[in-house]
Image 1 (cartoon, helix red, strand yellow):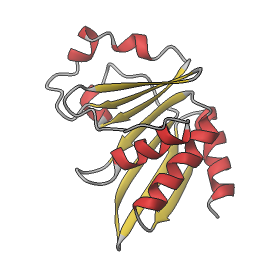
Image 2 (cartoon, rainbow, N blue to C red):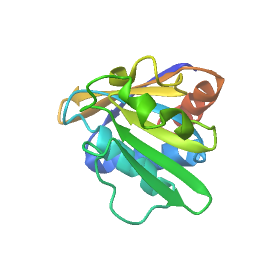
Image 3 (cartoon, rainbow, N blue to C red):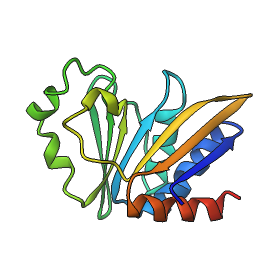
Image 4 (tube, one colour):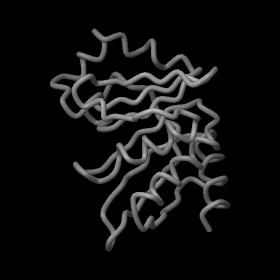
Length: 156
């Protein structure tokens, strides 16, 4: 399965989806998060990071570009590239060091980093739908396809 579309009713459902996705990824991979301002990208990231076991606050890295999370043996990085002026800035911050295959990287506004980001395992596009959100989950490789299959079983 390479694509899955889900309708989530509210913020609580978004966080629950994120927690399930965290379980499926086991703290490894690259996920692109797309959608307009206020779509729910950071809410989804919060669910994923909490699903990995993080107990504290999960804030938007809008001004810092990246927020790291050390959760036991798991490392997660939450990127928000919205304020990035030039994708080449990522090279100066050592972006390649984050993608060693041993961490989970969540990237909001990935289009701002075009040419400097690796291929994602999943791309999740969030858009408004009635009172909730619609999520289009697209696999970008075999790992992403396995994740889509697992999510489809959980969210029938």
